[in-house]
Image 1 (spheres, each protein chain N blue to C red):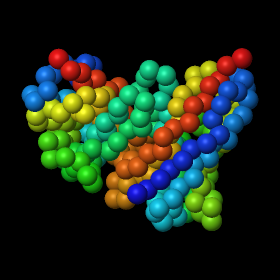
Image 2: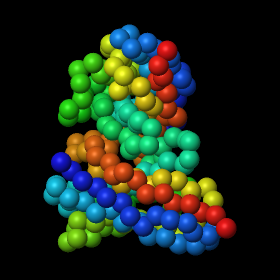
Image 3: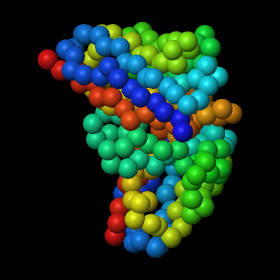
Image 4: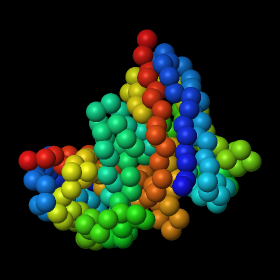
Amino acid sequence: IVMTQSPATLSVSPGERATLSCRASQSVSNYLAWYQQKSGQAPRLLIYGASTRATGIPARFGGSGSGTEFTLTISSLQSEDFAVYYCQQYITWPYTFGQGTKLEIK
Amino acid sequence: EVQLLESGGGLVQPGGSLRLSCAASRFTFSTYAMSWVRQAPGTGLEWVSMINGGGETTYYADSVRGRFTISRDNSKDTLYLQMNSLRAEDTAVYYCARVKRGGDCLDFWGQGTLVTVSS
């Protein structure tokens, strides 16, 4: 299953809302996770089951969608949110990641 | 909190072998599936391999099947990745990660170990 994220780069000002998209080449139901990766660090799980926040993830992170179309929304961006975000499907092996969206400061 | 500490990375020639280790702590290791994920320089993530808690069931990406072997020693709380017939395209940071119960996403990651395949 091919995961396609858009846009490749998103420029947003602190305090504004960011919307990141992920599309699957076939239905993955809600077996969809989102990860955040900051420069030089390992990825961190944000969202699983398409919409459930992982432990310790702030409420400004929200996931939605099912089937083939998914969205990660970050309301009121904080300075620490500027990073690369990956989606990942886990309905069918091999589990696959999207190519990532880089969220940068505008 | 959960800790995962990878080791064993380094520089190896094409065709060579390397074994990565991941020491786990602060959770009941034998009750979780574990995985290796890699990230080539400047690129995205690739899920390389996964093993169930008991070590009986393994999964591999097509790109490594037949060359890499995942295993675990639950008596030592340690995960391994034996990498043979290494190629330049295997150059990457290799992360050890815990598979979340109830869904195959990755809820804790190690800091990664760099493998460089070059002559």
